Image 1: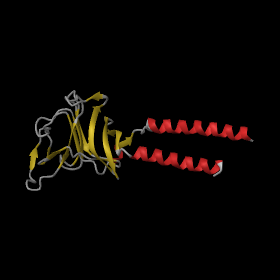
Image 2 (image 1 turned 90 degrees about the horizontal axis):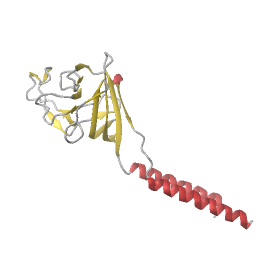
Image 3 (image 1 turned 90 degrees about the vertical axis):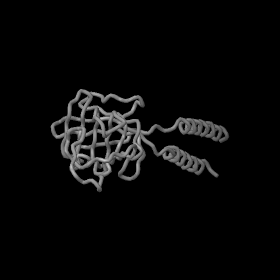
Image 4 (image 1 turned 180 degrees about the horizontal axis):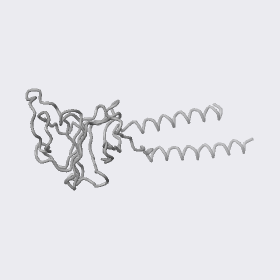
Length: 203
């Protein structure tokens, strides 16, 4: 096998190793933001698993309203809930937030975000009991009637509106290539350099 074919084979092997190493872990870190019509902004980050347009298994959640961080709880992360409509009790009720909307049924740990915003269904909150007093929270979904964006910061400031997907953004943070892959690549380049010198010396 000549040197050209060896280099091709090594290149393909290296590409496969990099691809496998990056895909081995399906959990990624994301940054997100939502800009309300009045210019106020909620931004933060979370860890999650990509599933088509959806991001599930949300954890390590942070949020801030206009740059003021939400207070985090003892876990160091905001709690994540999703809203599940209570079809048996469709009557309107007053939520602890003071907003009138359909009776809420909160499901712990099943919050979902989406890349285009259309699948968003989450409540990021500092309290483990979302049916109690709402403190430091950001929600997008239908829990308050129509698809809404609602936020209350740690300073007590409250903002809400009908949700607009065009003002939502979420992006995956760059995934670092594992150190093992870099070491493999460096060793491989070194080996090729030595091999090339030997070949030139032999000629």
